[in-house]
Image 1 (spheres, rainbow, N blue to C red):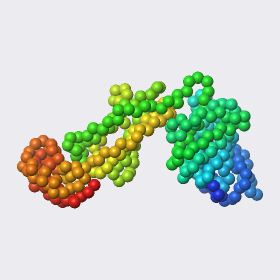
Image 2: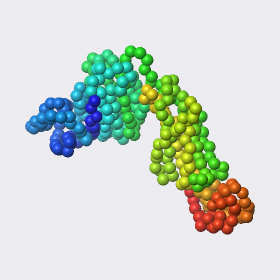
Image 3: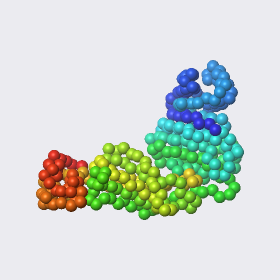
Image 4: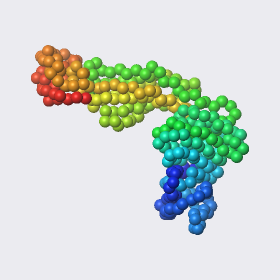
Length: 327
């Protein structure tokens, strides 16, 4: 199993870094063939390698590169970066449903044509992009498979062999996405909470379900959702920062299929914005004044800004100190 990394960019030269020992730059015309167990020639120099080479990166001016028998031919109008993440060292012996190749690709746009060699002639392979099946291809008599992609950002491409017997290509289904919150809304952990739940089903078996949250400062994070009796999943938390949040759910199954939901938005107001209109102003002061001296359980209404069970002068002070706050 090879775990080499390389990059392909147009109109630049090759750069190899082998165990931080050899570093060289050159221009090429034809294909580059690198065999870790043998000698290889770069321009007029011959290098002998007696142990496995690990590549930090290869940047190549040609659009063709081979690792063992697996070759990449990329046709793109724009510069494209390819990062090899996994390569089966014996594609010919792989079984039904086995992953044989995995790589990341990123470019600015346009249609990119991929031709990959080293596959079993006449055999079908599944091509997935970021977990979703995009095409089923058959290797030609020379062992090449070909496909195109015109939807860009950074994508993970995975190639799976199709053999005899069933092979699961159906991703999970996420439904009934629901968000519940504390009443009243609150940014203090002991008083405020948010719970996001959903239903996830699969034709074989669900593997994992994650909640991806974008925080008000634009930082994103994934959280593993908890399985609650079969097909129900949830994630409960308490957000301390006020502002606008968004989230989506992504689920995978035991066959490696992935599905992503759409994006959901929700605001979390600061405690001092009593009427939750996006601005702290005189209206919030009036609401606190209208409940002045009222008592109840801690944080029972938003006017109890400090959550101590009584609407008092300190609550007015908190609103006044944040007067004019927009969020």
